[in-house]
Length: 95
Image 1 (spheres, rainbow, N blue to C red):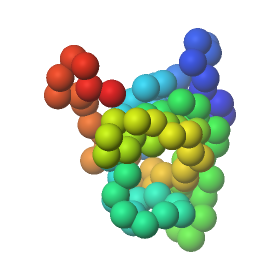
Image 2 (image 1 turned 135 degrees about the vertical axis):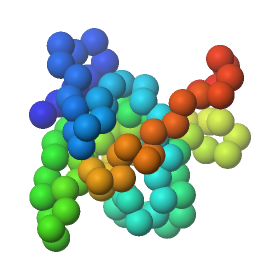
Image 3 (image 1 turned 135 degrees about the horizontal axis):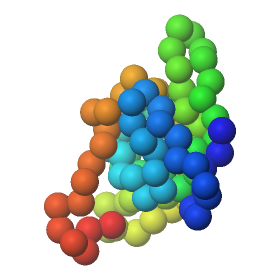
Image 4 (image 1 turned 30 degrees about the horizontal axis):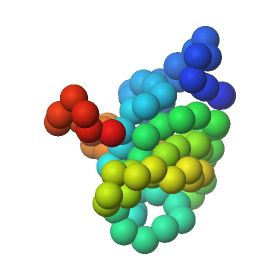
């Protein structure tokens, strides 16, 4: 499963359509491998994998830092956390 900007398919994972640019706020229990909460913007959905009685979706994403700058990152996100992780910009100019 791969969804890229301009691609022909947008996957739905765990009841969430993982479109390019979707903003997710994740606690450290809901992604691998890191510490602390992170905010990401989805770039590419790579695959869904089962592990330890749970499912994870592998993403290429841009992490949104405190100063609103972006940094590329690969991240595996717990599928069961996706619905609660969705964030919508509060202002038109928000990243």
